[in-house]
View 1 (spheres, rainbow, N blue to C red):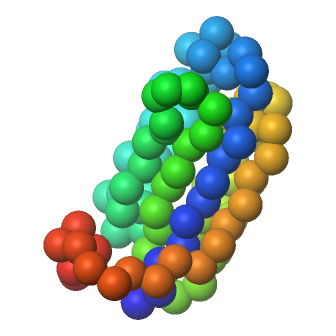
View 2: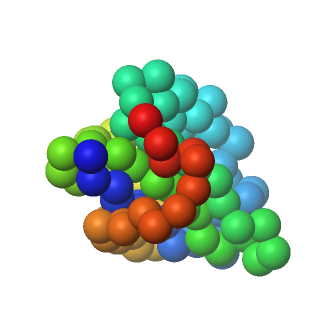
Length: 96
């Protein structure tokens, strides 16, 4: 199984604007977690300028599909994003 990191670079007004889209965003994440695709997800808090989500799969398609359907991306709360392969060296959260 391969791992991928999705990094979101957030807009300056992300915290003020996210409320409208938060429930839909979190539901997409919960659904991906239930399918075994999303391992971890969250945002940096000081400052709240970046979010990081760790994905598991044969390829990056689960992360790509998330980005394509995420209301944060669709509504301009994400300045830019990137998906990169991630090599796990240690950690029980990644055993499955």
